[in-house]
Length: 347
Image 1 (cartoon, rainbow, N blue to C red):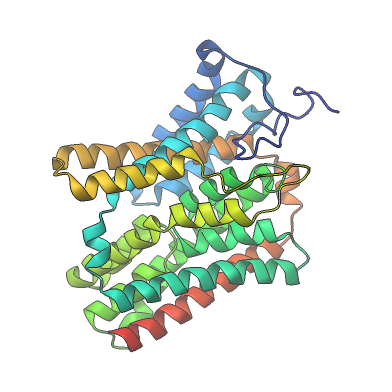
Image 2 (image 1 turned 180 degrees about the vertical axis):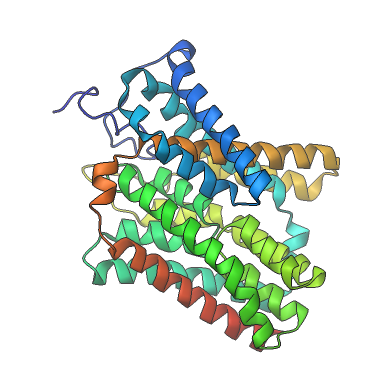
């Protein structure tokens, strides 16, 4: 069996503990890698703020630009912390953006439509992956990223599946593809809504149910109209709320090589997501607290994306070919088509 030093990429979180465990580290060991990831995130935030570019995409591109640092052994503990622990806490804090009242306000038919679109998009990813000769796990990763909330969902799904199922190269490729697809959707989908003469409510449903990342979905909604932006925000946050049950579903059905499980094991960050969303729904929380939680979630997820870019094995990434991007493209078209149908039928 190879040692930890011979397999530096096998360091990310694994729900089922079926990867080679990393040796224990102290906080001092984490400082170099975590510092680089934090600086990359701050640089990405600067670029995103000044040029109105997607933060996730900028974090990934800067992380990939610093990929040469990923082979440094002293970087591994901090980069692992950023791509594992910060990611999980970011997912928990995403729950602060969601309330049960927002979801209920959509109405039962809209909620059912959103759930069906999500499941159909996820299934499309798995089916297309099988047709192209790729693993169902990768199909779930790509399809889930399209179906739920882009890079955040990709990171969470990869964490749940573990690195024996999803490699760092595959994850990095999905992050690149999903960022490009989301940016494209933000530009073109509002034009489609205008060309079809959709109402504000219809456009909001279509945009919120089909665009990948949260920021792009909300931005596209408000570029159509303020009313459409409000609807797109609620629909998109409903998709974000469905991240936790989808992760639980994946945990229940994903095969576990060489391991047996007596029952469903739900990751702690999934439970944390539900708890934060429930508290946000039932307890009046000051806006300054929820805003701070949202900012912290964005920072944690962006830092996890940057760390993933730094750690990605570029040689493997460049050799993957176009098939993974085909999965993202087909799943995106399915989500768009179903969202248009739902907008016209439900509203």
